[in-house]
Amino acid sequence: MSTATSDTATVAEQGVSRPYGRDSVTETWALLGRRLRHLRRAPGRLVGVVLNPLVMLLAIGYLFKNAIVAPQGGDYQAYLMAGIAIQVGLAGIGPTAISVALDLRAGLMDRFRSLPITRASVLVAHAIGDLIVGLGVLVVVLLVGVGLGWRVHGRLLTICGGFAVIAGFILAMVWVGIMLGMTVKNIESIDSIGALVLVLCTFLSNAVFSVSSMPAWLRPVAQWNPVSAVADTCRRLWGNPVPEARGFPAEHPLLVVALWLGALLLGTVWLSLRRFRTATA
Image (cartoon, rainbow, N blue to C red; front, side, top):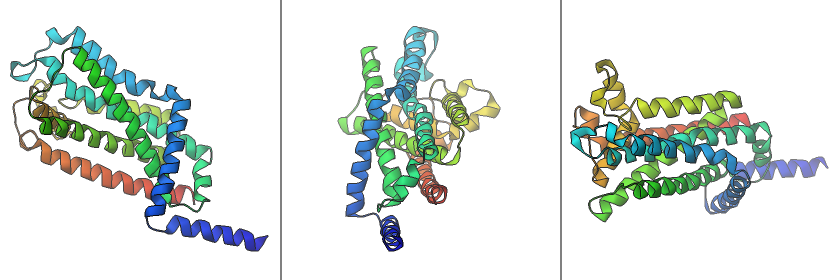
């Protein structure tokens, strides 16, 4: 009995420590199917991800669109859509973090660790599953925006580039949620933190209102907010109204986006995997 147990532990350890390769892709695919089935059975967790951007779009972008003037005198609804798309990523942080925290609390992560699989495949599958959901929500939000009159302008390549930037932002926010779920154990605290991040990152940026309308002492914070850089980049690529460029972030939004998203992805992936090894050891 002890020999069999020892052999099983050895196999599990070899599976966990091997580099991410062809077998790991198969493992990730299997775990991704589990994640998607779980989301299908518990759709209630995704209600907030869908409703937050839709409520913002309908309330500000439709009901009060004539009461707010867009920068440079453009159409405010067209200006707002980039910020609404960004909200899809921000609204997904809380549900992703809660799901990871619940898996940890239930001991599911420990059971995954006992299997002869690569550790990274567990979190990578979780991230891909939530990314797929986020992209699905993004499609719904953008279709509603089109129904309300939002349009993109320019070449197909640049328009697709704007969607790619939003997809990259959603992926980065998924990993922020995974890191939060691996770090904070209290579900109520995660919910509060997720809501706070959503509000602060939205309104301390140019996602909804121009930075020039904010107090002078707050403008540098809003200008260097990664949400502002993502929003400006998407507006330029989609041919929507763009605020007057003032300062390095506004003049080089694509560079700032690349630096911010690269740093967020590298940092959150590394911290999440490191926490996964220690939390389930």
